[in-house]
Length: 491
Image 1 (cartoon, one colour):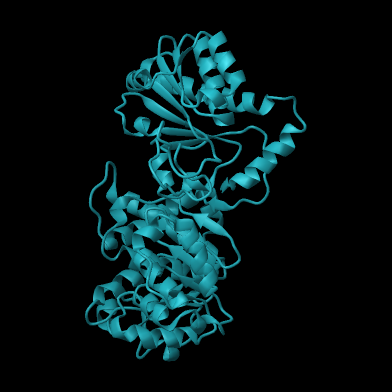
Image 2 (spheres, rainbow, N blue to C red; image 1 turned 90 degrees about the vertical axis):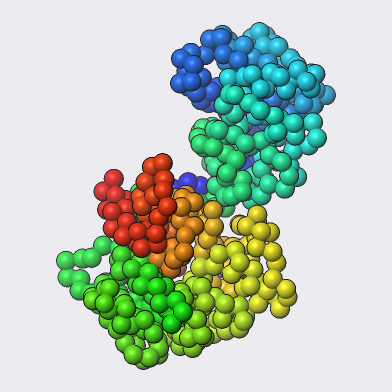
């Protein structure tokens, strides 16, 4: 599992460690790991470090110091290193002295610095550290806009990205590789910041931070959470997931939600809705019941809303009146936004909401009794949006998007590391709703069901799209779930 910590947590852990170590040890550890990564990149690209053109973009403080010390290490291996000082009066003096002693040169002229930047085989972005806020300053912006031929390596964090949130309030310098020290930062895992990081590599420096702010599951974590039938299991003991979805206008949503539910670990799927005939024709193993959730018989979780149309209002009311977990999606979220969070106040069973940013805007407006905020604004502040929704509705929230963020009302936050832009296709969210609902019925907590569901859904999208990628259908994503489930369990 990847653990990400806020800047405040990182600073406290660094201070505790530095109090036990000789002065400068922590920076030397970071610089050594950074230099080793750069040397591997240069060797891969050019066959050697010797003779390579390296540019260090050095801002003020320790981030610039890390970059300068790493530049000095590369200069000692024969690289031609130039340090562009963006804040000469506040440069890290020890790092600058080390670079000069190793034969590196210093560049103060802006035009000369940009020329070196454009010709470099490798650029070290040490402009702004994890404490930076507000995007790149005027002296650094030209480097975000300039052409480049070489690989850019961000030191701990791409300059211009907010370390705690992933927000990018202005321009930022896009990296090909980000070398982070001690622990991941939330901004490295959440868009839009994550789209600037390139490949992220963690260098251990001995930090022991407290409980993480954000986590991201990996294959082994998901494998440990996948439901597995025991020797004495039957379809009812494995859990029954109820699906209330589809309408005369959107019958396909029922089929897609059921397709996801059938591959989510529950022992049986019970369907209610107007698309019963189409569902049974396509999936004869599904249990079909007349009416709505109230008369459907016992289930261990409900999925309500995909393509539900006008029937979503009654289906949502009946499902929320039950004593089992309820996943609310699509038209169910529209109804929930109309009713506001008070409708969930009396529930003893958990609720899982799966909005995209447009639906999130309506939910937030419903909670505040105000005009919906712009979806673009919410997409740029994903962590804050997911947390706010989870708090307002006292529910677990799976906020869909380029980075899917899962937040629960207790404060835990996870981000999903899988996925592909090819998943932006009609019906893909219906499949995810059915899949996550089935995991709920199989016994996973809302946080785990949402996290595992998003992880498998993302992998299925990649599997269906292939490499280098091609358009996929939602049904193709559902059909790929069996293969990726197997791949996660038996890597």
